[in-house]
Length: 205
Image (tube, rainbow, N blue to C red; front, side):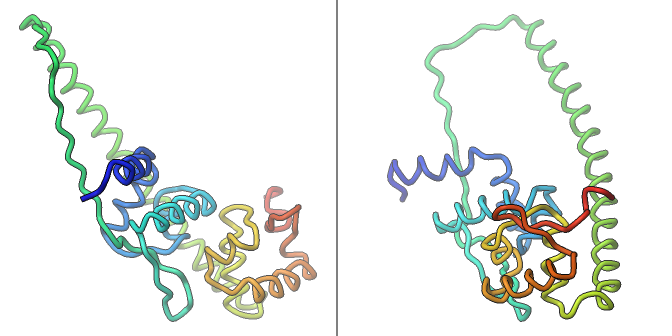
């Protein structure tokens, strides 16, 4: 049984829609950062922040696969039961109730239709992203020296990231990432701006 402070922290976590979406996704299967980023259309940086917060609260945990990618999974699932107790009874005219009910049904239909359109659109986008990643991996074999370089470039294709964030996304040791980035910078593939790394010339495409 959680005390009031722990309940308050859990409610703060669940108060964020994207954290609820991440939890719902991890209920289906363990995922790594870029997978969550692609599925939920969030930046890897935002995903990392949400995951770290939930890992600190022991809602999530993680493990490394054979490629040393960090997979996240639910360590403790959350079920919230909310009871409402009315302090007073409000009398509503029957006609108003019917009108409100019809309006709710109409809104529900519109929302379901919109959701179906968005899901269909997202499925197409996910297929396109998967295809693009496959093309990058296949074409990158002639450009990059190893799979770690490809992993870094794919991570940076999502958004600009710092060294620690790249370590979180790729699960490559930071010392090794630093060496790999130096090589990519010398070959004009990656550039550094303050503490962030980015793909050189990507905005021009």
